Amino acid sequence: MDGILVFGLLIGLILGGMWVQFAVAGASLLYIWFIKGFTGWKALGIVSWGAANSFTLAAIPMFIFMAEILLGSGLSARLYNGVTPFVRKLPGGLLHTNIAGSGIFAAISGGSAPTAAAMSTVALPELSKRGYNIRLVSGSLAAGGTLGILIPPSITMIIYSTFTETSVAKLFAAGLLPGVLLACSYMGLIALRCTLNPSLAPRDRRALTGRELMESLGNVLPFLILITIVLGSIYSGLATPTEAGAIGVIGAMLVTSIYRKFSLRLVSEAVTRTVLMSGNILFIVFCSMIFAYATALAGAGEALVGYIEEAEVSTFTFLIIVMAVFAILGCFMEGLGMIAIIVPVLYPSLGALGIDPIWFGIFIVILVELGQLTPPLGVILFVVASSYSKVEIEDVVIGTIPFFAVIVLFLLLLIAFPGIALYLPSVPVGN
Image (cartoon, rainbow, N blue to C red; front, side):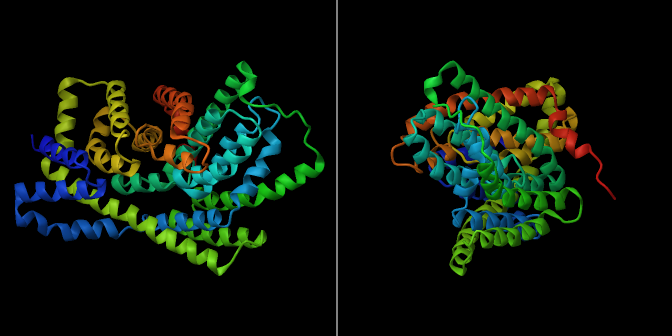
């Protein structure tokens, strides 16, 4: 009953128009006062310290800073142009560049919105002029943007790790193969649709020349080297995610210097955006820690475990319910807010159901992807629509529906074959 009171108050505040982070903190503080009075608030100092005293969380501003340097330099256009010659002969042509380019940029940005923004500003004007179907272009960019939180490094995975005390390195490893497979699924959908309906995308059958190959490699290789160094240092155990983030910042500065885009103004603007974005994310984490404390006092996790055991809920049924909950919350809440509300309550039940916490983290991240594409408040939909004046939000929504279905099918595939996410984390690294 206490858990229902917490969630009822929280949902009421959100539906009333309050920002999610304030609704989470407000509902939690009111509930703690209701059952513990001022004594319960005394523990908030420890909760606050626990939220702030995390070396893992320090990786967030590092990865954001790296992405902001590259995004602010305008090098996303070079990355896009570098990928284009390798995919232009495929059915769907440059639409595959939207997915492949997003996948590469996702391994730099750590977030979906920067990925979608970087690719959309380059691709929408260009593909619109070339006669590509604008809805399919918009849908592919929105879908590609969601890869930003699945292909590591991922800020969302770092937040999940903070709540569950799981290994960030293992989460990053677990997200790599699903991220690549999901990107390939998007490209498969594009190829199928454009084969069935060639009018959706013009074909460019020109062969790749030696000069184009060298230019393309020159545009792509610095990014691939940067990704390899950052992720390789984590997977090999040579660096923590936070240290790897710092290495990535230095690497981003070197890449922008190679292309003669580096300047003090670029760094200054990147620092400003990093502080604003990091402050918002870390404030959500702080509020979520208070909420986790309130739900612990309410015994919501233990009550859920008891219900699952009594009702003999199967693992599959549990996961389908979680999918439904995220689909509903995605209509009016952003990803970090959903994680903040749901994960602290669901996590204690994973052991009773035999669900691996690392696998569940990837499952949750893909569900957040789904939420980012769910109208009316899917954030990626608005990022893509705002990137080009000739695109309406309706075009993006309609264009995204087939990719939305692909994500749902991929989630079912992940449930049926959990090794897709668990294979790489189980591979031993060198001593």
